[in-house]
Image 1: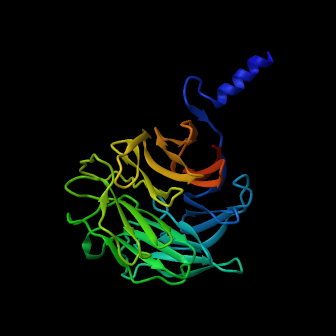
Image 2: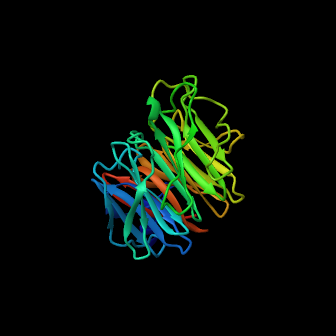
Image 3: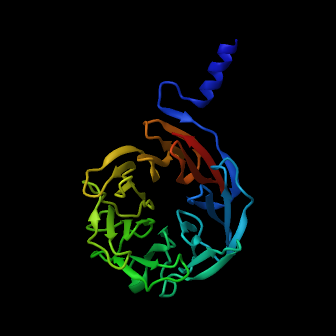
Length: 348
């Protein structure tokens, strides 16, 4: 009888005959479009939106429990849905958050030494140009770089701004890329990652009728950028926007790795290398953990995580997963479902 019950219990958590494990999750807050980052002390910091409020909470025990949510700021008509939401990064000066309004202005917020949040300024130097509300943020040391889809001159381009003081002030806006076919893909979020003076950006282009991912790099902290290069050998001819930008990360040697969707297939790719299939779905992301890649995406409305050993973990219904390493053996996946923020700790 005990053996029979053990089989029943195991069957609840593992699909026999497949590599997909089923894992439970915890609802940690009511809100939308979470972002998460871990600082050097191991504390997880999470930001999300609810209504016009930017909310923040943290975990000191590797996502096993979270603090009560606190208000960062209220922004009228905060963008926090459909891949649009507040972004968070850790600088040498503390926490940095960026958030966009539906009118198309991006603002930055800093957590001061007293523990309070303050508005440090508007990032876009031309009014209401980020009307798509699609942006990304990365930081290292005292340097930070924000990137977004920008509608100045009437067509979507990739623009950015850098900060050398942890987000207290921002540079004159920088044109990162303008498509010769007038516009980049209009509804796909760009990605950015910083390492030293290198700033790597991925975005979905619209070139010759194709909605392919492109990669561009700065080697001088974001002052200038190299020529954009296409990712992957094949192309996606599409008269429409897939609303799916993918993600970028750095491997152990500091080289960029990417993950993205083409025609419903998830591909991983390094610049100038051939793409390889990792799954089926959309809304993909990745992180590197001790030199190994961990992926997450949506598959038939379910959030799934692919471990480095090839095992796929199903976490349940939801949208827009994000990952953050806890240590060399664990990663946390955070996502939204029905305007609730979910968290699941995954053992690698």
